[in-house]
Length: 231
Image (tube, rainbow, N blue to C red; front, side, top):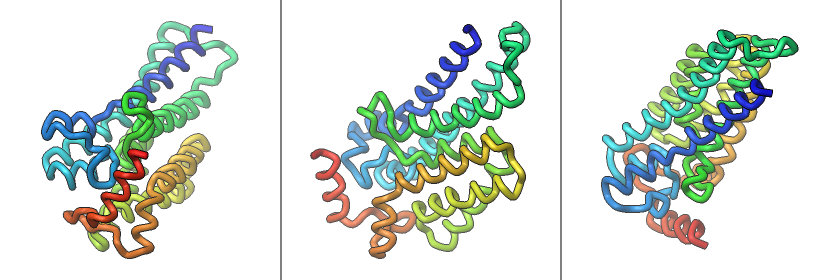
């Protein structure tokens, strides 16, 4: 019973870590604004970059990545602690459970970032937190995904397109590198979720109105997003 309670508590903490409103807090502290009422309405690093500048954008990016890293580190610490204390039931295969718990904690952190309990279940698009999860899950997968993101960004200078390409690539990389089944399913579910969070970006990409790196959203697009979020 203690083991299952500990696992549930770790997943809850992973969600709360993801829910930490980094971009929202930065905007409040630096400019006294609600970042959700500016730009794309996202609390993620890209919107912070466009609204507050490079320094805050980079800081938010790093902290959002750290949230994902910490969520996975917490799972690994749980298993180390439980093994030393003999808290893992005999019926539990630690190796198998570790993979599934890492995958579930990663999904919890991603969900928390985009559906933060502190922001009325709004938030960012989970890209940075997903990258942090991947780096902690498998640094080879994380760096490869980051490389694909960077390559597309250099060519297109469109962050959303780079994020979508990375979300698609991560599942393929999991298969090619023969990662465990829980990791593969995480990549599939997490990748689809990140793409779903980019619905408005995909519409602008198809319309040719998605801003490139350093550009702001067209005024009429920003106004329509703000009115939609307030209704």
